[in-house]
Length: 387
Ligand SMILES: Cc1cc2nc3c(=O)[nH]c(=O)nc-3n(C[C@H](O)[C@H](O)[C@H](O)COP(=O)(O)OP(=O)(O)OC[C@H]3O[C@@H](n4cnc5c(N)ncnc54)[C@H](O)[C@@H]3O)c2cc1C
Image (tube, rainbow, N blue to C red; front, side, top):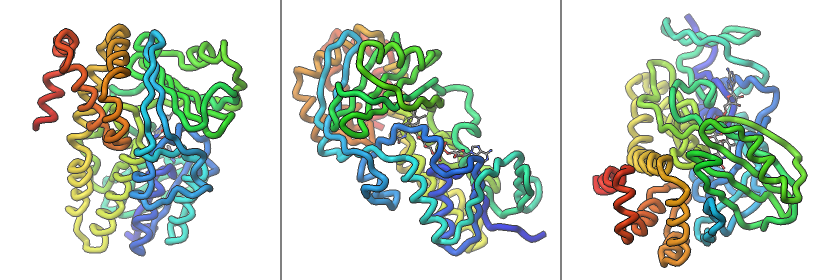
């Protein structure tokens, strides 16, 4: 039985395209099947990424793919206290996700990947030597299938938050400053965010457990002058990565593997690195006829992000259990502490454990607060840092 392709990638989002680019660059035959008729549409992302992360994925912050640069973050407590963090050192940009995805698609095609749009994968059969992939139009066979279908194919019972995002036009935000609104009553387990694309357009979003995100966003803009240009709704996953990314001839990458940060649900960097590593391991496996090489992908991703994800998950557990009064207290203490300068100086946008450990020092310095947090799982978090 002959294969039609060496690898079929199901899903032409950022991670599927990065994996395809990587595999095609080794002269292997790759096909990407994307259910939508255009790459990068619909745009369901806030697009925040560090320049460091972008370059590690092999892309540069060109004008075409970058909408804006962020220099500051203003964090609001539930009662309106606020703290501003200088984020200049972190070099954060806001991506134009449509152009970003299209740029990766162009590179993948340049290497020889074949991208077929409007092809929804309806069935995958991996019982034989080759994987059979069915769409409404045809059936294709490949040696390996990369599952990059995003959250739609992630098998997890927990960790999904309801989320929505508006593109709004207004004049009350600042171009270089993101805003974060913490409130465990309004958006349990998450927050509202405002990310400017330029002087007068911003992405305003909210996520949380069991919320009606549209109601919350409508309430937020009610008393502010804002014209809604676009609305999207899409879940965010914060439940942690799958135990295994490789199942025989099927390799999961990106959101389909749960590779989104358990703190913020950001997945361009962590999933993109997953796709890069998967692409390299698949190429090695096929070129050397060594199925075991696929395991390198899992091992390497966990070496980079394993502990990081455990710390983020435990920090999330604590955040989900604290009430608004405690959030208020931490923001107030943070605003008059020198940790703020340290956060600006050392916090890493891609590895949140650094910022988490800095915030922990505030809790540790206030015995009454620390005592409260011990009940919420503080010791486990400290132990993770030590391990
Ligand atoms: C509101 C929101 C804001 C976010 N903000 C950020 C942020 O600021 N920074 C950040 O790093 N991350 C952010 N994320 C997360 C980020 O968008 C994802 O982690 C990232 O896009 C994952 O890429 P992916 O390729 O794994 O999946 P997706 O981008 O979901 O791509 C999956 C692709 O598969 C296709 N597909 C699905 N099913 C099939 C099928 N059966 N057949 C064929 N094709 C199929 C889909 O059409 C899609 O194109 C945000 C997410 C949301 C929802």
